[in-house]
Image 1 (tube, rainbow, N blue to C red):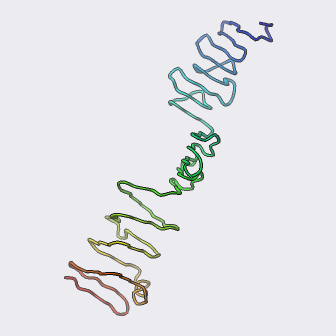
Image 2: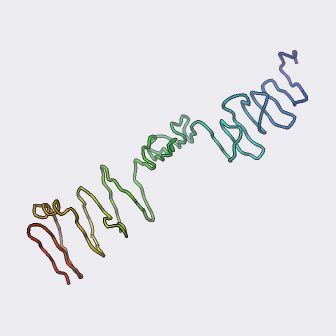
Image 3: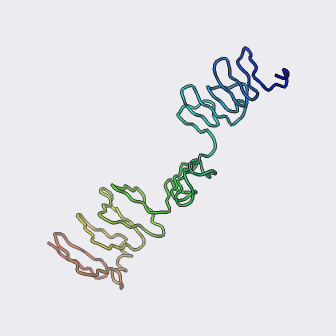
Length: 219
C-alpha cells in the first residue's frame, strides 16, 4: 500500500476486501469497477450498463435483477455477428435470422416489415391455415393437394387470373360470382380455356350465364 488515498494492493475493511478496481463484500459478492455489487458477481456496479451473475446462476446484461437464465434488458444480441442491427440477429446476409423490436421475424432479411418474412423458399411439411391471403408479385404456387376452406362461401377469391397446371376436383359446387363481369368474360374470347382432354361426369349441372344461357345436365 502506498497510502490511504492512492493504493495498489488489497485493503481489508469491515465491509469486505477492497481491490484496486473492485471489491469482495462481507456477504461474498464480487464487484469489478465499483464498490457496491448487488449480485454474486457484478461488473460496473455503479454503471448504467451492468453485467451480473446471481447466486442462482442467472445472467443479466443491463439489468441487476435477471429472473431468467439469460436476460438482456436493453441492446441488441448478435450470434455469429459482431454488430447486430436488430434486437436479435443470427449471422448476416442471406443466412441471417432477425427478430425486431416490433416482434417481426426475418429470414434472409434484416428489415422484415411483416410478422414473418423471408426472401427464400418456404417448405411446409404438414398443413397451412390462412385466414387472410394477399398475393403480391410472384403469386402463390401449390404443389400437391390443396383444400381451400370448409365453411366459407368463397374459399378462393381473386380479381386476377387463376392458373391450374394439374387437375381441379370439386366435390361440392363451383360458384363464379359477379355475374356482370363473368358474363362478359364468358361471351368473349379466351374467357374459359380448357387444353387437353376434359371430362365432365357425375350428377348435377354446370351453367354458364350470359345473354344466352348454356346448361349441361350431368345427371
